[in-house]
Amino acid sequence: MFDNLTGRLRDAAKSLTGKGRLTESNIKDTLRQVRLALLEADVALPVVKAFIERVRERAVGEEVAKSLTPGQALIKIIHDELVTILGGSNVALDLKAQPPVVILLAGLQGAGKTTTAAKLAKQLIEGQKKKVMLVSVDVHRPAAILQLETLAGEVGALHAASEASEKPTKIVDRAIDEAKRAHADVLIVDTAGRLHVDGEMMQEVVAVHERAMPRETLFIVDSMAGQDAVNAARAFDEALPLTGVVLTKADGDAKGGVALSVREITGKPIRFMGVGEKTDALETFHPERMASRILGMGDVLTLVEEIEGKVEKEKAEKLAKKLKKGRGFDLSDLKDQLEQMMNLGGLGAMLDKLPMPGNIDPSALKNQASDRDLRRQVAIINSMTPGERRFPKTINGSRKKRIAAGAGLTIQDVNRLLKQHTQMERMMKKMSRGGIKNMLRGLQSGAAPGGPPRGFRR
Image (cartoon, rainbow, N blue to C red; front, side, top):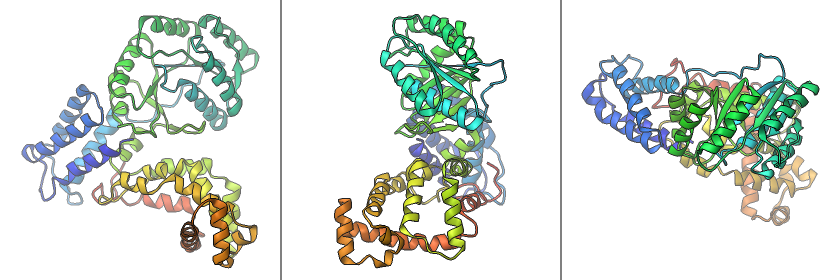
């Protein structure tokens, strides 16, 4: 998400090279480029107009500090305005109420409400140690009820049964009663969706809301839906007292405009962002971090938090101790690292959060960093004997041929993996004192060329 917008905004800033200060005349073409970039990203026209006007008012006449180029000065202004339009700061869920605290999810069919219910439950269970119950009132799709029951089992949540023959309001009454008797802290209600906004759907969801009296009412919106999502957001905001928004499918080919439009139009904070199909693929939404990501400055803080939460600490500590003792980084260790990368969402998800130099196209880099290659590398290592993994130098020509055949790949693929292992072994020796988390934190002290300089507060 945002790849095209990131590149266009960078190009716009570069057009100010050599200017001494920002003026009405020299930013006119630049702002036109920014405007087109936002429109191409599916940002709603009224939002684009308001955004450009605010940037123009702040930029005209601004003196360029000695430490900033005019392009960097404009990027700083755009960054600040993006933070504002995205909500300013993260707004946590309000769970301070008599349990069970009800969270109601609403949105169009296909937006990802059911999977979001499970992801949110898992985050509350593992992150806040809450006892969570899930219930579906989507009586129009029996498959959705079964899906939620299955997902509840996967994430360790309780599940309140429901039938397609029941009235949604009756299901809510029973679920609240069951949640109380089970001493659940939170009850998440997954409501029905439709392919488009209609009166019948709105009446049903309003009735469910009145009966459930939720503490949080979250609008679930597909990031790839474009202007349809904006229209749906407006309709739901008029019908329900929404308290927040969850963006789904943000890891797909979304242009990103929905994130900027929905927050501005509804005035409701974006709480979470779905970044994959797995039940742990739900990120807390931080406006400042997202603004930095849009402008190609990366989001190292979120990456560090993900590493701390998803990397297996026992394996990491075992590897650190092994390296400190002077023992080598073998192919089993490499396999662990590759699998942990996949647990973090793959190389593409990691690249999204790393600051990129101004002369590098992030989308081109992602195309080269295929997650399919990670899976192939793991397959090659799986095709080796324990001895070969421990002592890579023993792998001669005949062994390479056997390993390649076992993985269904070529000898050249095996050679590339062995070369990569040698490079990583050298890097691990250098990192053994600091670790990957310290290395990533170090990235925050600098900035990518073409972006804000050292010391620019994000």
